[in-house]
Amino acid sequence: MDGSAQAQTSGEAAATTLDVVIVGAGFAGMYMLHRMRGLGYSARVFEAGDGVGGTWYWNRYPGARVDIESQEYSYSFSEELEREWKWTERYASQPELLRYANHVADRFDLRRDIQFETRVTSAVFDEATSRWTVKTSRGDVVSARFCVMATGCLSVTKDADFEGAGAFKGKTYHTGHWPHEGVDFTGQRVAVIGTGSSAIQSIPQIAKQAAHLTVFQRTPNFSLPAHNAPIAQSTVESWLANREANRQAQRESGFGSIMMSGEERSALEVSDEERRRIYEECWAKGGFTVIGAFSDLLTSKEANDTASDFVREKIRGLVNDPAVAEKLLPWNHPIVTKRPCVDTGYFQTYNRDNVSLVDLSETPIETITAKGIKTSAQDYAFDAIVFAIGFDAMTGALGKIDIRGRGGLALKDKWADGPRTYLGLTMAGFPNMFIVTGPGSPSVLSNMVVAIEQHVDWITGCMAYLAERQAGVIEATEAAENDWVAHVNEVADTTLYPLANSWYMGANVPGKPRVFMPYIGGFSTYREKCIEVAAKDYEGFELTRA
Ligand code: FAD
Ligand code: NAP
Image 1 (spheres, protein in one colour):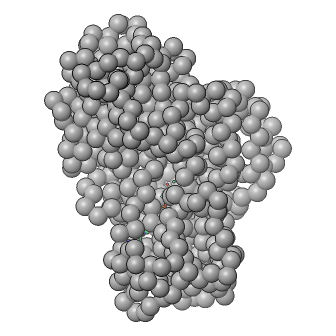
Image 2 (cartoon, rainbow, N blue to C red):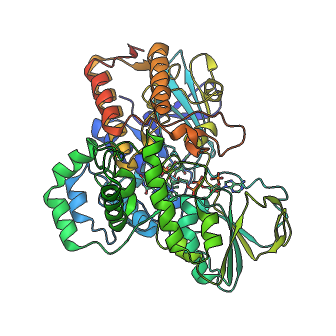
Image 3 (cartoon, rainbow, N blue to C red):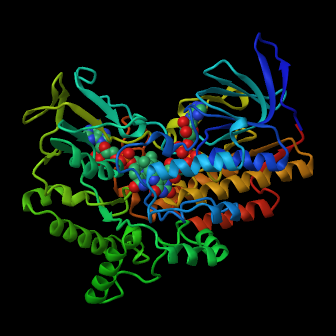
């Protein structure tokens, strides 16, 4: 095992020698660090932000909150942690989630091995030594045996590269890197561009402050009511009383969440009345329950139509002006094929006198101007523009690091036609590098904290196995990677997902290859596969002594 020593490399810079470099201090990086300490490995986390929490550090826009129930969206690895932390709301808000992340960092004394405000710029594999040389924006040079990319699936915001961007004289904000001190929109004319989850959460809050809010919608989205509320003491007690069983049920579920696990029945095998009763019941429960109502909403267009129609009907009922309601109806994608949203009063916000909707499918944005936004129909003047335009998802953060594997192969070249991984965890040609919730794993199609824990545990188990076998290096074979990529695509093609222009498909970023990136075979199926691979002495990998 390496100490955390300084060693001179051939260049001028002194390289620190470590067992493991971890990139990112969100929920993935923090837990990875904790597990590395458990193995007795020297590890350092590099984090671009000045605090822990990742997503919940950066996305401080008004209304930001989790859309999976708080106790489900939390670490399970420490029973003590779980018993001492008290969630206050059914869906925790961003400030509460950030407090939780900070509490975890303090409780497990993580900060002493996290270097903040430091961006990893390159990671290069040296075949002679079988080590990674990692460099940072602050001039650090680290030689590490393992490199773990905990860089996040939704951590690189999309650029607001509209025609005329930069001309606007007012204030601009992106939901994905919101000012820490908050923003007061009181008395202002505000524009929000986008109607994804971030917009749908922030619009009702911004509307309460702004003099006038104009929403620029390119694609209307399905959104389901959260019915957020303080957590009842009885819910907390019941969750903790059944903690082990609940956690196991999450791991054995399709989406890593009990709340999202639903009926085994087809939507088409029940009567219209029964189906409606079930959808109404789910709608009243709130959250994602509607989309878990039947087993075939993801695979049968006919079944999906029943859910899509149900939600469209609800939207019509929530919006007073029928013309506005029509514009808000999602029409070009089946429900779930773009990430569904969970809201608090989103559609009702359009009933306010100070809110208006611009449908960009009718009147597209032509340019940002000094005063505001010009569409093909009119000029709008604003004091502030909020870009709720999303992320370069799943591959964005890795694409920003110069990662080079065997033979100097650049990851961006390997992934030129779309990401290729074995299990979403590793890549052929990139030995001893792991990705937490990478493309090709369920990641964003599951409760991410459960997916993160499963990946970190698997990586830790893999490292322990290498130590036991006195193997220095592990690398996915090309054959295993090819088979896995084929399987990921094959499963995606049995679903309705490829029908939508979603960020899952890379369709939101111009020029990005259109490939369905996450694995939709189900979290539990995937987890079983990972367990099986490990049990078969890491089938699909080559181990060498280094
Ligand atoms: P992140 O939290 O994204 O952390 C990655 C960290 O890596 C970041 O802090 C980033 O600064 C750092 N980093 C990246 N590149 C570098 C680099 N080169 N050098 C140094 N540091 C770097 N998931 C759910 O399951 N349920 C939800 O309700 C949910 N809500 C969400 C709401 C929002 C607004 C967003 C954006 C995402 C949401 N997600 C949700 C997904 C969320 O990203 C995950 O749940 C989870 O927080 C991811 O944790 P992570 O540690 O993998 O990544
Ligand atoms: P998003 O889902 O990608 O939504 C971006 C929105 O901006 C879309 O409506 C998109 O329209 C629009 N847009 C993008 N570029 C545009 C352009 N050039 N012109 C006009 N409109 C443009 O991003 P997000 O809302 O930030 O959410 C990303 C993901 O983060 C979510 O899907 C979810 O996984 C997670 N998230 C979760 C929560 C939560 O509830 N817990 C909250 C926020 C985020 P098109 O649809 O036409 O591309």
